[in-house]
Image (cartoon, rainbow, N blue to C red; front, side):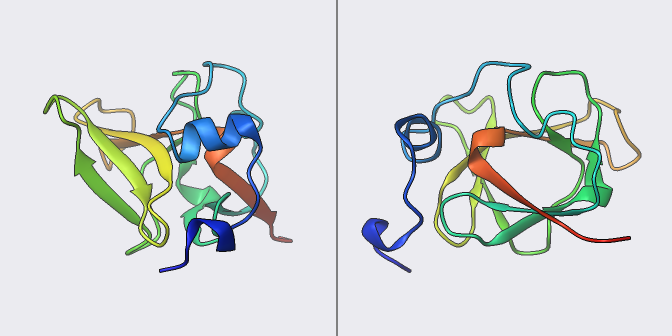
Length: 125
């Protein structure tokens, strides 16, 4: 695993989300309404996390995905035991939270992700 100083340089706002486990304001994220084809990567370490095919509109205020790239995201029970945090499996950068049982999609899973935790690599159709 890399040291913190070997990862991508983060802005103060990105650091507050990714390292300090903050949350961006709902409805403000760059990727909330992104409909392009591609791959979402970790802002901190560039690891591939989500495919655009797994993104859906949940109307929750943050980008939502009903699946992750296999092995790319770790699920950690919050200290209060009520929610499950999701982090990049490569660098442990905070992504958001995952919710199960809301019935938004057939997979019945919603990864609620901060846009500030992500970069996007567009692919041509």
